Structure formats: structure tokens, C-alpha cells
Image (cartoon, rainbow, N blue to C red):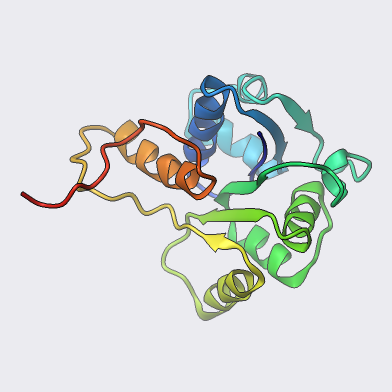
Length: 186
């Protein structure tokens, strides 16, 4: 199994970093593409260094490199997740404006009918953003807001991050033990 992971410049870069950690631990190969702002968010929001984040991926791709395998629909993979997904990235994908590799890879994922999961972290949402997400959902993308649940009784921020990452893994049918699953109230 091989997944494309896109990190865009929205707040919440820790979600993407944690996803890469978990996928590496599970032995799932990853192709990573990061926007310029995502590189900055690593430094702004975390104690991670960008090189350490890049080292979590099986293969890293330059966001400006349209000769990358990610720019081709023929590249075999299980799908793509953009985590976090900025509203700029949502708009670019929704409009088919693939002016960087992350957007092109998402475009290829949609056209090849592979699973595309977008994890927006913006709030509140305006009408344009909602319309763009509706357009993407109608095109086959999964819109999975970074909205953790609380039924597993999180004790620290990492528990909340794991809940969202676990939801992403569930979409791809990847077994994990990041959070306790809801079993009803008894």
C-alpha cells in the first residue's frame, strides 16, 4: 500500500506529522508533498524541524516539480490525503487550478477515482469555502474536518490529534489502535 500525503499551509500541521509517524510505524509507504507555507507551519507550530518531518516519508517530492510521478494519473497508489488542508488548497482543487504538485496530485487522484481525503482546519467557514467543499464532495472527495470527538475521553492534545488521524486511516481501511472506538453507552 502506498499513500500520497499532502501538507498544506493551514494551522494544524501536527495532524499531518502524526499521520506520517503512524503510517511509518505501520510500514505503509508514503509520498510526501508540502507547500511552502506547510514548511513554515512546521517551524511556527511545532518543535519539529522540517528535515525530520521529511524523513518520516518514504519519498519526498518538490511542490514545484511537475516531472514527479505524482503529476501522472498512471502512478499507482491507494489515494491521497491533504492534512491539514488550507482553504487555498480546497479552492485550487475545486477549480482544477493545479499550479503546484500538491494540487496536481489531488487532481490526478480525483480523475483516477481514487480516494481523496481533505482535512480542512478552518473555522468558521464562509459561503465560498462551503461551496468549494460541496463541489469536491460531489466530485468524490471525502471532506473530513479536523473535529475530534470526545467520547474516548481524551486526556491530552495528542489524544485529540490521534482521533482525527484515526478517522483518516479508517477512510483508507487501515487498521489502527489510536483511539478507543465507540461501543455504545452502557
